[in-house]
Each structure stands twice: as C-alpha cells, then as structure tokens.
Image (cartoon, rainbow, N blue to C red):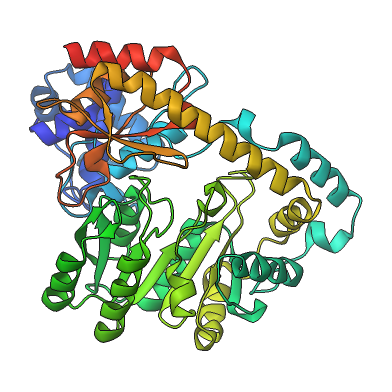
Length: 467
C-alpha cells in the first residue's frame, strides 16, 4: 500500500482494513464505476493478509452495494459514485490540522472526552430551564406552528425583533431586509451560492474560523488569506490582495474575531470599507458572538448601512446548538433573489425553531442569561490564562474577552503534534494551522475557555509539551 492509503486504513481488524482501503480508492476516484478490483490473490499479497481475509472483505462490500460480483470474472466497483469527500478536494492536509478533522473530533466526541478545542459552550451553561418552558408553551399553542412550513423570509415577529436588536449596534435594517436561516453556516452557504461562481476569489482573515475554508472549498472558490492583527486585517496587505487577486467577496468576524478574540478598530473599519468601495468588494460580516461582548465593537454593517456589507448571526452559541436558527441582513435589492434561492435549496423556514427562539427572546430571561454568560466567560478567561502561562502557553492579545483564547506555544513546539498527543488522552485541541490558510500558525492553539475548567487539560498539555 502507498503511504496515503495506509494513513486512511485505520486500526480496525484486517477485514476492516481491506474494506477501508477499497472505500478510500473509490472515494479518491482511483476506482470508478465498472472498474475491476484487484484479484483476491493479488490484493492479499498487496495487503499482506490471507486470501480468506480479502474474500470476506469483498463479500461484505458487495453486501453493502459498494462493489459487485460477476461470476467467473471477479469483483467490480459499483455505481454511481459516492459524493466526493471534501477531504479529497485540493491538497490533503495532515488530519490533525485539517478543519474537518477538528470539527469531527469535537462533534463526535463521547462524554468522557474533554473539548477545549471546540467552538460552543458546555450544555450546563445553556438556558435549559428556559428552553423546556418555551417548548411547553409551544406545545399548547397553534397547531400550525407545530406542523406547517414557515414563510421563505421567516417568522415576521422574530424578524421585527431582530431589526430592533441590530439597531442597538447601529445597524439599520428593516424586517423585509432580514431572512431567517437554519444557522449561521447556512446563511454563509446561501450567500456563497448567491454571490459566487466556481473560481471566484474570496478573501479571508489569516487566521480565521476554519469552517470558512471548508465551505469555500465546497463552493470551488479560490481562497486568499490576509494576515490578521489585534485591530483587524493588515490594511496594507489587504489593499495589495485587492489589486493582485480582484476578489469577489471578503468574509470576516468584526467583533470577537474567531479564533483570535481580536476586535476590529474603528480606524481599520473605515479604511477597510473605503478599499471595498473602490474595488466593488462585498463583505460578509459574521456576528454570531455578538451577545458575548461587554462593550459593543464597531460593526462594518453599521458604518456601511447594508450597502455592500451583509450581516449574519445566529443563536447557536447563546441559546442552543440544537435549535437551528440564524439570519441574514442584506441589501434590499438582494432579497427577492435570495428568497428564490432559499426556496430552491430549503423551501420554507424552520418555523418551530423560529417560534422557540422568539419565545425565549421575548420572555425577559434572555438578557439575564447573556449577562450571566459574560460574567462566567470573564471568570473562565482569567482562570484559563492563569493556568496556561505557568506551562509556557501565552495569550496573543492583552485582556481578551469572549469565549476564545488564542495562545502562542513556546519556541520549537508544534501545535499539531501536541494535538495528536492530547487526543490519545481524550482531549480535543484546536491547533493553529487549522485556522491558517498560509499554515503559519503552527505554534498556536485556540482554547474555548468555557470548556477548559478540567485540570486534566493542563496536565495533558504539560505532559505533551515535555515530550
């Protein structure tokens, strides 16, 4: 086997290893529909297993419909092809720093796994009592709420409420400029479908939220990174990228940047918008961490007036990741086209989730909940930093706020290697190069301070670094 195949085989039984190898070759398109598989004898020699092992593996794959047997002729790859794995698009990265690897390790982790590298709050920090109360209220409500499609733009009372909430940040958006989505991720996906053609260039921060990379790869966009500073993107390099690459789009967090926790300064915001206007650049402002702020930061959409800036958000971080509800605030003349696209891709809105969020936002408990979250996050930020510094892991910015602490490791320590070692101790970390398009963050880790209370995390880090 070649090294790439060996890396994907895994550590299961010999039969499972043979099956995994065939699956990988089909996913990588080296075995296309109708292609004859290696003979049992030849493949047993290649895999260094017995012929009976290959026979059983082939029989199992045939039972799953992945391959087909032709009596007297052998086994053949079945069709149609499975969808191309995102992991196969473009150059493969080491799985310890691959964005999709980080997401899967966090999402699939069992109860015994610690997740300081994940991007959400612990369940105990969420308003569980309020959610149950709201669900009981909805269960006694209108049958239509429980059974019918929502309108394409989404629940009108929630859109009115969101317009008032955005006004608190200086963003003027009428309810008919707001579209509800199933999440912040769906909002970005919908906008990419609306704005991009394959091969278009998109600017992102370097580092930035790693799922931006994966999502843009799925849209076959060319992605260009611009170094991020404690006050926003490096403006000189941003201007250079505009001239050099003529991008269609820029995606960023202006407040509580992910992963760095940095905050966009007003000076950088104004210069950024001036450059965008000169270059006819559209900006997607991802603002899903808005309610973690103590003092509101500048919003590009507020300065721009939703001219070329699209503002998105969701409630997955503050209310519930199970209640999928996000939103887009966009220029008025985009709304008809976005509505048609939403109908084509997801039909109506998720009415049940929208009603649940509206109930929670209206009952007065949400403000108290987020006030408590800010207090808890501030305390967790201080505690996490005080535990990391003695082992040589230092914050990138002074006095960080929010959920994420972006930290630099000592000279010569590779974050990806630390992440691999920590995973063997059931600790999921987020190494810096998962966020960096240029792969220049090998000495960084992102910590979710809300998920970093367990002493085992710091003990594991210290042991991994000492090795």
